[in-house]
Image (cartoon, rainbow, N blue to C red; front, side, top):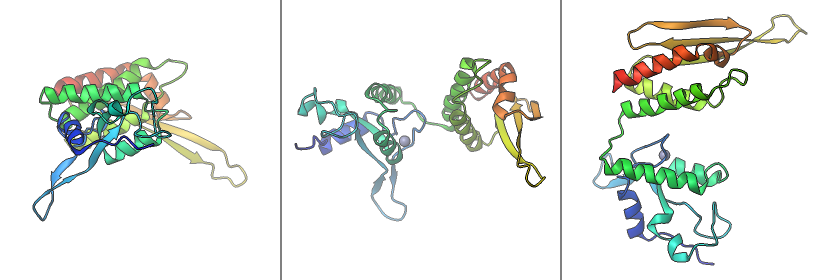
Length: 229
Ligand SMILES: [Zn+2]
């Protein structure tokens, strides 16, 4: 069966509807730029299929027509890395998720949203806050590593101290034949006024310390969001 690829006109529409910005909310990379030493431009993205162009492809839906499959509504603008990620892992990136991303990216573009380091920081901080708020005391804080890494990148770009920093070190026993691994966790929570709290604890992971400091970390992140506007 012939693959239902997008025409050039459809690809342009998909890109223009999101201002050439990657639709993945954790990415939002600008995907068009001038060539450095010559005229012309570079495009670091392509229109990705929400449901695959041909049978066997990621998220293929046999129930829709070929016309629908190659239409603007079945495309999402993603940078090269994000397009690869969603196609390699279709079980994690389902149709409903991609449609949500598309809608959100189009809505941001229609408001003239400009991706700034501040908005990246806000997005990352809100994800960390969501993980903290959902944390169960018994189960600990799960799914926080990704958001914390995004927060680290956004903080570095803004050249501000990292608001929430956790680390877990594995300590090897020095005695031979007694290869016991101990752990040591550290946690630092910094406020916009320069004050900070936290510490190192032996035998506990960084995220376990963070669970204890959950309320402080929540307050600090909320203050950073207000401070950075
Ligand atoms: Zn991307």
